[in-house]
Image (cartoon, rainbow, N blue to C red):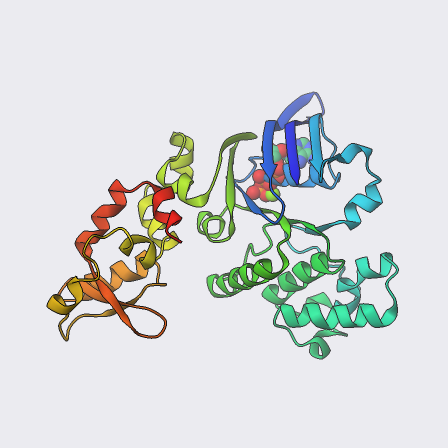
Length: 333
Ligand SMILES: Nc1ncnc2c1ncn2[C@@H]1O[C@H](COP(=O)(O)OP(=O)(O)OP(=O)(O)O)[C@@H](O)[C@H]1O
Ligand SMILES: [Mg+2]
């Protein structure tokens, strides 16, 4: 759906040249969220803005839906791609309603369709449409402004979204809330999304795939679990952190692990005691491990959503994680 073919960007400033993006080859499937991850200045925004031609490409081609973007009409291209700017970029002298409805108006939608769309988007973002309709951006909190930025990018229902650190500079609680909303909305809308972040946990939470960059070079493009369990080189390890195996525990669920434990179900009768904590099979392995470590018996009952006991999990079961290939673990889902 989005294909980068040998894409480079060299900025010329005075007599100096900066290679911001260096021969990138990358494919993003339809309906997939690909997170561009990497330190400040590694070229994430540059790569993103080349897709809607806000920045010209020095070398190589970018295709959207099989069409080379340089052969497309710029205005049409931009209207078909939702763009959330780093630091939200709302129009300060326009009301919230006008900010959100910019693209539908340009697309010539009729008044009632535009009104309905506004209400729908505000509800999607968890904001009351009437309360905010006539307010200006400065009258909103940072988190609310960022949600308006996301709503505005979604307004024309574009199949492709470019999101440049849309949840940056927010406190961890609002950030996590918006990330959860993003996941819920994306499950429904299935847009093709390029999402820029420099936050490893955010990338792991939101990306179907993650592309890690360093100084304009693509280090690794893989699923979150592959990045954590098989980082390609030292730069990737350095960026994702030495605690990558702990991060991996937040990615995997209890059900992923217990399906590989021999005798898991038959343990239940013998070993459950009153001190045994309950662990949901939908909990992350991080939550499960924390519960098990806090338990005097070092084990827990695994229950399903109807509270049926499925078996017993032990701290020692986590040894499995060093033996089982990630694809095998997730294949059980
Ligand atoms: N207009 C420009 N002229 C010259 N150099 C630029 C220009 N825009 C960006 N650069 C340089 O290109 C490199 C990549 O910048 P870019 O904004 O793409 O990084 P980024 O990964 O988005 O960083 P951040 O996480 O800080 O937003 C940086 O070294 C930056 O200084
Ligand atoms: Mg940037």
